[in-house]
Image (cartoon, rainbow, N blue to C red):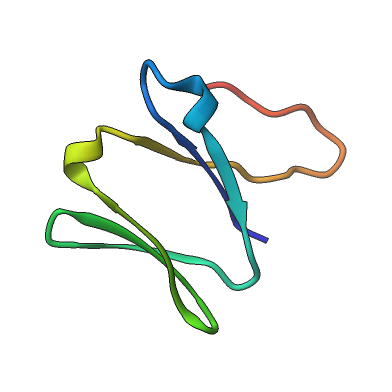
Length: 66
Protein backbone atom coordinates (compact mmCIF):
# COMPACT_ATOMS: atom_id res chain seq x y z
CA UNK A 1 0.00 0.00 0.00
CA UNK A 2 1.55 3.34 -0.97
CA UNK A 3 2.04 5.82 1.84
CA UNK A 4 3.20 9.40 1.54
CA UNK A 5 4.66 11.62 4.24
CA UNK A 6 3.89 15.28 3.62
CA UNK A 7 6.13 17.64 5.56
CA UNK A 8 5.78 21.39 5.82
CA UNK A 9 9.15 23.02 6.61
CA UNK A 10 8.95 24.98 9.84
CA UNK A 11 5.48 23.60 10.64
CA UNK A 12 6.06 20.08 12.01
CA UNK A 13 2.61 20.04 13.61
CA UNK A 14 1.11 20.20 10.10
CA UNK A 15 2.94 17.06 8.88
CA UNK A 16 0.65 14.30 7.68
CA UNK A 17 0.98 10.67 6.61
CA UNK A 18 -1.60 9.57 4.06
CA UNK A 19 -2.23 6.03 2.93
CA UNK A 20 -4.91 4.35 0.90
CA UNK A 21 -5.13 1.46 -1.48
CA UNK A 22 -4.96 2.39 -4.28
CA UNK A 23 -3.45 5.85 -3.85
CA UNK A 24 -2.02 7.73 -6.80
CA UNK A 25 0.09 10.89 -6.85
CA UNK A 26 0.11 13.02 -10.00
CA UNK A 27 1.32 16.52 -10.76
CA UNK A 28 -1.06 18.81 -12.60
CA UNK A 29 0.16 22.31 -13.29
CA UNK A 30 1.44 23.64 -9.96
CA UNK A 31 -0.47 21.07 -7.89
CA UNK A 32 0.40 17.70 -6.34
CA UNK A 33 -2.84 15.73 -6.52
CA UNK A 34 -3.58 12.55 -4.57
CA UNK A 35 -6.43 10.38 -5.83
CA UNK A 36 -8.02 7.11 -4.76
CA UNK A 37 -10.97 5.09 -6.07
CA UNK A 38 -13.37 7.88 -5.00
CA UNK A 39 -11.47 10.65 -6.83
CA UNK A 40 -9.27 13.45 -5.53
CA UNK A 41 -8.60 13.17 -1.81
CA UNK A 42 -5.89 15.83 -1.38
CA UNK A 43 -4.36 18.57 -3.53
CA UNK A 44 -1.37 20.64 -2.47
CA UNK A 45 -0.23 23.77 -4.36
CA UNK A 46 3.48 24.11 -5.08
CA UNK A 47 3.42 27.48 -3.30
CA UNK A 48 2.84 25.61 -0.01
CA UNK A 49 6.49 24.48 -0.10
CA UNK A 50 5.59 21.00 1.16
CA UNK A 51 7.97 18.08 0.83
CA UNK A 52 6.33 14.85 -0.32
CA UNK A 53 8.11 11.57 0.41
CA UNK A 54 6.87 8.10 -0.48
CA UNK A 55 7.27 5.79 2.50
CA UNK A 56 7.33 2.10 1.60
CA UNK A 57 7.27 -0.70 4.12
CA UNK A 58 9.89 -3.35 3.58
CA UNK A 59 9.35 -6.71 5.19
CA UNK A 60 12.27 -8.03 7.19
CA UNK A 61 14.59 -5.04 6.87
CA UNK A 62 15.07 -1.59 8.29
CA UNK A 63 14.20 1.47 6.19
CA UNK A 64 17.14 2.76 4.14
CA UNK A 65 18.19 6.40 4.01
CA UNK A 66 19.24 7.78 0.66
